[in-house]
View (cartoon, rainbow, N blue to C red):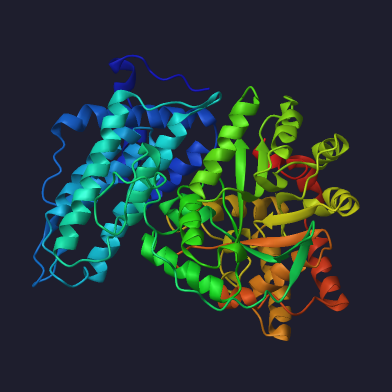
Length: 563
């Protein structure tokens, strides 16, 4: 581990030539090098965060928010350089653990937004996207707050200064909404973050009258306008989950957990939920740590008369050493239900970080006895523990694991046990962060730590390298392209179909960038056909050249990459 320097003298000296490198590397290259350094030792991350916090706290007295906007409604409103500078500072605060300090600046931005004279017309697209990005920053800050409040013993109460900070933000958001509505602005850009902060602070919202938060409605929900009914076509392919028929494609909402995948307003997200529903996408996967995914999903489902047709799977994740009690777990289930605006959970998937602590058996027994959980599943459990859990008499419906052409570990041990015990796999990473797609065919090897790579792409690119490298991956894409042309689909559809054709796979979870981009029609092309024997042989020719078995031995069974 890296020891942080304790004195100013120790931190003042930087090798002259090293300092020359820092001074002359282009910013993107410097970020790439820094990301590379951070992967070599976990201690570097702690050092970076610590020194960043010191810098931010030291410079806070001299930082002034200044003017964030220029122009007017007639000539066009625009953000200033200071807007960008302030937003960057906030994001650095959130990334380094200063979430409450970041909330203070976010409240300042909202106060500036309240003073905007927008007129009757909606903000221009460029300004709107800037404001939506602030909405996303607030959600990210509140996710960091939730993490800070979560202890091994459960969720702690807010400290007095923390409560003041959040209450001030709620007040600023409500006043901003009131001011905008007085100008005829019916769509409030910050509705998503308002709902999220109200959820944490137990503030009751009435989302129609613009500021009455003293009603008796459940906290964080307010009055949710009804979503018009849509025609929901039956899924072309389904699987049986212990008597319930579900589609073989789930929509994954993990991309709501970070601005890295883009940011959208609550209204944009709600509209996309409606479009997906109209195309038969009725099953959604989320987690307790995917930002406000549970809240957004729950709000949408509760607002539609077709709620019973929509299936919500979430997770209860134990990442820290914890003493399991019935109260702890039941409180967590209550929290999941509340955030999802439901009295029950369709599928609760349990993740346990530490196999050397056998309390996961006790935890699963408690969860199995909770009648609010319709189906109980696992997340990233290996075959040995799955067999142990089943042997303990616990009824498991699913196990969510990584499964793709590049990571076929479930075929080695997991698949057989699932098939013998009627456990269905829900798979993620099936498209390798988007690499298993037409746009990567014939492309040079990407720079792992460039700004253009998403966190998912960095993760799965490393898996591609371990599997066989970029050259072999290009050979795989070439083979898949021939099949895609044969079936008149895309490479991503072929990659998904390969996983779906295993009998122990229930569904593939396809990442969905709600309100940012839409691939529903392309995803539907996965249905209605199967790879034939010739296709399988062609794929196997490539896979046999890979290090797929070595991946199992090095990384271990399913979920081993997280332990």
